[in-house]
Length: 155
Image (cartoon, rainbow, N blue to C red; front, top):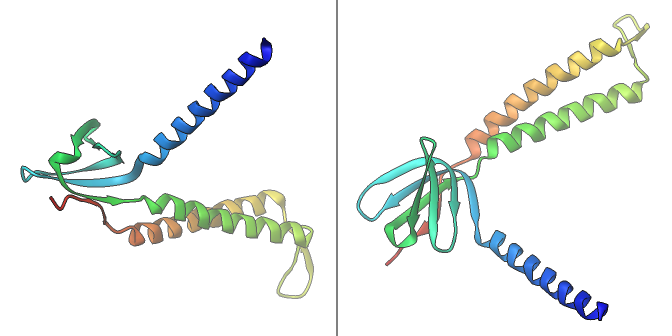
């Protein structure tokens, strides 16, 4: 009797997982968006979400929802700036930390003398260079994040 319920619960659980996975695939999310409506209006906002039936855009803190029959075109930016900044800062911090640990906490000055590096000084330097790298990566991501057409109603 217990096996009967076990197999039924397994089937229910699997069907629930498939439903959740297919719902996630059907939704596309973007950092920013522009929605061009069939009545001539154009809205620009953040947190663009698209499903097979509708477009949702956060305009001034309010979610605006439109059916795809009302929409002529949707353009979006994926939000690369934050990702690029995090990647650059992570690489810089990782490289500096690895170099410091590999050196054993010592370096050579201009006269050729071996000098100990204070941990606080090194951590401050790593944080400073990580912040600068984040800024450079953020700017690079901002420049590379162009508007892309993600939906076009040709009807």
